[in-house]
Image (cartoon, helix red, strand yellow):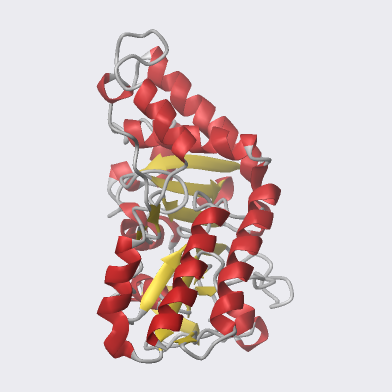
Length: 368
């Protein structure tokens, strides 16, 4: 048998998964718990899979301390589809929704909403560079918006909300806060009760591509527009236990294994401590030299996605080829911003970040 060769995968998504999870999935591939079937082959309505999805939902509810008046939905289409699904579900009789734009993904959310309502730019800008989160007291909220939308971690630009806007302090305690948490969900504890709805694509911190999580407060389930497709109507999906149509069964199974892995690690407080340590290690070195540059203001730096640039960008290809040779993959920045990006999600070990810092130092020594 060939020895297992694993690299350090810094991809922004689909991203690294815990090795324990991959090994368990491999062991269960042909015969899940004596059923004689792979999870891929199971009927989504059979007792085997209904047990899998029920356990996944229970574990996620425990990890995030999701209140009883919120529904957890397992959906498809990714976070990009949610940019349309959310206004179709939450507008009700209103015509306006407010958006805070802090990076490339919230720009996409704003533009998609134009198909269904009049999105109002409450804060931020539709063009970069994106380097910070606007202070909540400066938000220019509409008179009667359906919701306020934020992207709490911008995967491309590396901008993260480390504090949520306080809707009471803004004088809008009843305005639902809607958030895209795709690239930092489960990386730290959150207070779900402060949101009306949160969502995230699975392929960064949860599992494989194809699954989207939605957590929505019960009182927001009756606002769908008539044009909303039934398979994407939150109320319909909730009433059918995420089984109105065939869900992404294998992705839900892997997500469930990740939830169990997170519980074994000590839950989200333990993961937050690890993620802070990893981010401090990487940013600490980047800040110690002018060979590499970071642009995001320190107070708003993402713990999950770390964009950085070589001072001499003519060295970019040498940097990437050397990184690949060292077993450090997927460090090229997004095409819209260039440079480099290290995504250090929950499943990225401290050893992986240490290996990256060692390479950064060596590359600077030989090319500086």
